[in-house]
Image 1 (cartoon, rainbow, N blue to C red):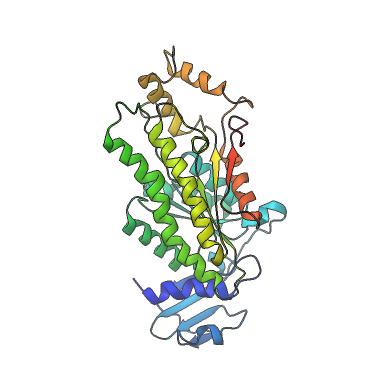
Image 2 (spheres, rainbow, N blue to C red):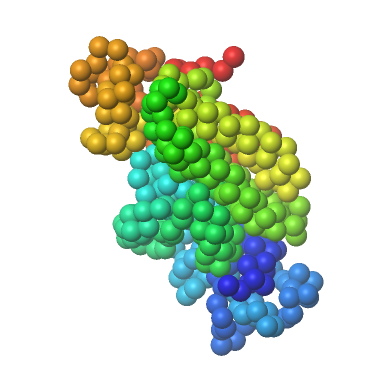
Length: 359
């Protein structure tokens, strides 16, 4: 791995900061003719706005552009977006667990809002399949699939490195990957408890640990480059959940990490918030016939008197004042709000249809 390139790419994105974002920066081993040739030590001093290719001695070359296709071959088809959608227009966004469920919904909505999105998922094939579908729809390169196991630090670091060398940096990191295993505290195995904690809690820590230095490097040239980390938590982060302690505990813990990281990283203009959705009843987390929550809750007797999966679903739908589950666009709107609002960090934003309200 080219360590120097990993340091220079986010610096270049920061040097091209236009008040909202920097250019896409694509690392190449070399280019035939670069507009700027310099040493790593003199890069910041010699860089001029409008430069589209940079060759750094002993490191390699970097191609710059409005989007990925523009940087690579000069054929940008960037869609101009106005209003709140412009909050992430042509910004680099990463969604862990983005190949399915809430994550897929968030990915699709971010793309609709003009973002360049990396789908980071243990299901690498699913991530790449979804990326190919969305790129075909957009007729340009707007989505990338990348493999990651958020519980493995080497895997998280490798994901970050791949993203940085592909586009130069990260503007919004959505830590969405999560798992749930329901069960009574009297019966749950330590293995299951650790599995939930490792993905939901430690995974968020590892992702933040490795994305924060990238974002800090982007901010360094101007001191005005705001970036965002958003954890997709749960309404179970705001109140306990019967026979679901491992999940609720990991989500409560995530709120503590969000508040702590927010206080630390604000000096780098990195905002850290969490969105706390209600139940996504139609996603695999709930509806998978073998491992979904409806099946788990039926088998663990969490819903008294329930005899079928349909009974469990009706029970939970009745708990929501707005009479429906949460959708991906509901969550994405809250994420966009957290990005747009420059004066909020360390917050937990409920998206629960009124089921859970803050005191």
